[in-house]
Length: 147
Image (cartoon, rainbow, N blue to C red; front, side):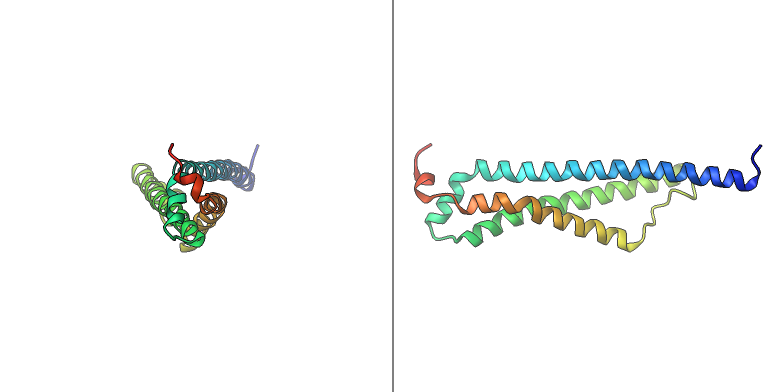
């Protein structure tokens, strides 16, 4: 038979296992988001290869073309981050209201949001670097050819 401290230890161990599973799901979600972002940016660059070549033909520098790709990726990631945070906080808030739980509350510390934003910025820079380089190196003559 468990005494009071035994129940507390059991509850603590169960809680730790539950949060580990949740963190695992979060990690998988972030990994999928990373691949999704990289795929989207790469496809955008591939589909617009002619456009980037013609931009180079009219005098756009490679640095400017890389900036175009990075800003487009940044727009997608910022909107996705804001939407994701809004949905997450709203869902947690609704669960809190529906259950009255003192455990599930929509009051995360400020550094969590800062960490999520910094992670999104790192993902943007990481996933847009190679496609941006590819976009800036499109030969002008190849882009000018008829498709």
